[in-house]
Length: 116
Image (cartoon, rainbow, N blue to C red; front, top):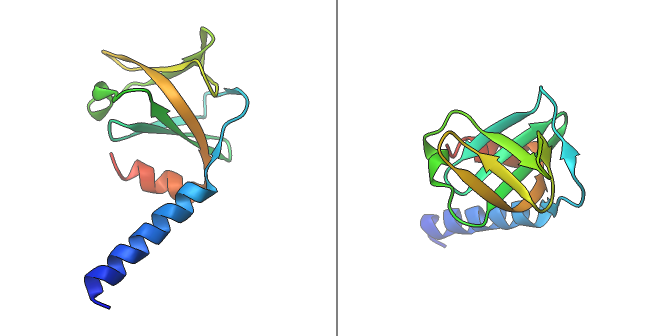
């Protein structure tokens, strides 16, 4: 097997393992002052809350994520609340509707943070 095929296969297996280990958030989480929100390109933000980690995906691309330094999550008109549905991420110039929230592990959180 060629080196390129081996590397490609390894990457695909790694990605599928990450996807398989992600579980969908099933109830709301009240984020505290110590929670960290980081962008991961224009498609996701990742959230660290205590020892829990989440990947937040959007209904459409959230274009302001690639340049903003300020993000706020809210749900049910309550700031710092992340819910499986009805949540939004507000940036300096945009409000992005959340489509899905997945629980992820710390290694996946670190990988997404590097995608800035």
